[in-house]
Amino acid sequence: MLTLASKLKRDDGLKGSRTAAASADSTRRVSVRDKLLVKEVAELEANLPYEGYYQGGRFQFETEVPDAYNMVPPKVKCLTRIWHPNITETGEICLSLLREHSIDGTGWAPTRTLKDVVWGLNSLFTDLLNFDDPLNIEAAEHHLRDKEDFRNKVDDYIKRYAR
Image (cartoon, rainbow, N blue to C red):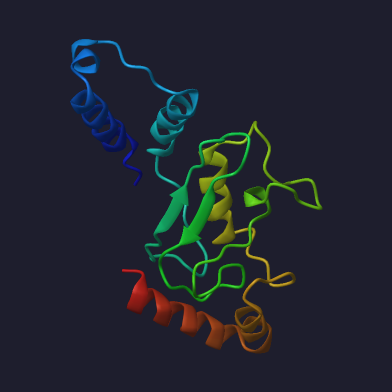
């Protein structure tokens, strides 16, 4: 899922090779951001519930956590091609909690975590599937026009791109 532990080890190796004093020092400074991320990644190890149109698909997301996390939201992109009203075929995602400022008040706040982001993404595949305010208008209109054909296209995308 997320490989924060390997990133931290790699960062340690780079820091240790720069100076002899750093390698001799057995204590390591870890940023508050990295401590938060380690804790949140550990909490994400549990299995997520899964149901709905997209059942059986494996969707990969890229998450960029900025240095100012958790004051600003992470940037998330779907790497798997998908037919979805709230995710474009190029991976842009419409999820209010990923916005720093949101009209409805459900945008990012410093109290939110990566776990909230994962649960929000999971909800886009189940109960937050929004056909009324879509990012991918073509997919939403397809659903309104012909639900069965929409399901068939989703299944086709899963077979092609999400296995």
